[in-house]
Image (cartoon, rainbow, N blue to C red; front, side):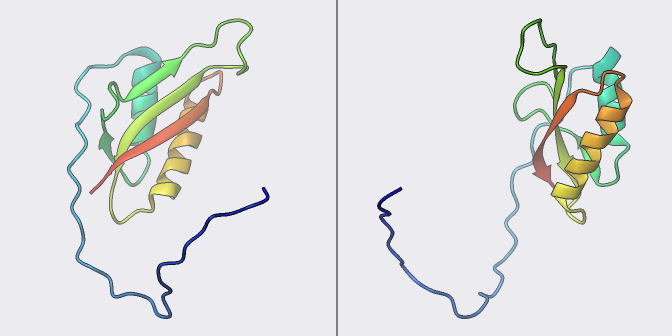
Length: 119
């Protein structure tokens, strides 16, 4: 990098006063029934303290991608969407969910957690 275009519009010497809490719309709840590994993943996630429910902001809340031969990843990948209680740190809950899901499935897949709601 040889050049940066930056304009400073203001500096804060003090912490600003907190504004009123903004209520975001609730992410849609999961509707479709699950079975097999999807059901095991969902059950493991819902057992983690701070997880309120699974959500469906991007479609089905549990996505398990099977890795065909020659793929870059050595094993399956799981993505799941959920809502977190406001009195829990979303980052900590997501980490605990990742660990719980990896331990639940025998092949220990990689896991991505999308927090699509905080209530």
